[in-house]
Image 1 (cartoon, rainbow, N blue to C red):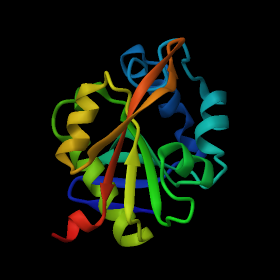
Image 2: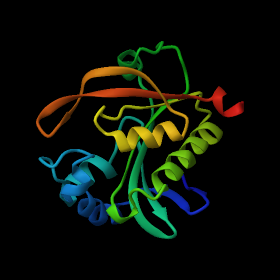
Image 3: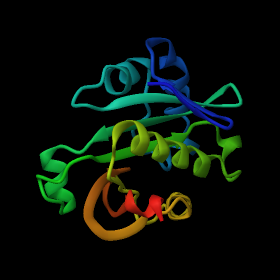
Image 4: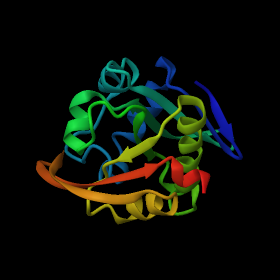
Length: 183
């Protein structure tokens, strides 16, 4: 999968990316929002958890104006995730995404919004997604604002959804329904 729009280029993660991913995921500024400062990654952890994926998860590197700035993963929801989120097991083409910008100097410039919109377009046009979901922790207001700008709506709170820095945090189930794009 390779997908580009405007200044965003999304490409599959490769073994050669383990060094930059380890750099981002050992930075406390990034870990405060993604994975947690108590769980820094090294190259081995990156290779194990982000490069050699299973379960239908596709990992990608995000480039902006030709510079590697972040990571994104997307996946079709499996039966357990559909149940957890309150969707019918029979409902098809629901995709989830997770992403972060690892280069903090690119934060608060609208690039995250552009990234999410680009990925939404890819999943709807190329994968036939009818619903997109994310589950940011409720305290991550910057991410929630970004997703809302892209058309995601808060559906419900998922209690104790994510272990972050030793504490289980509530998350918002946020969703985007494809029909909204057609209006």
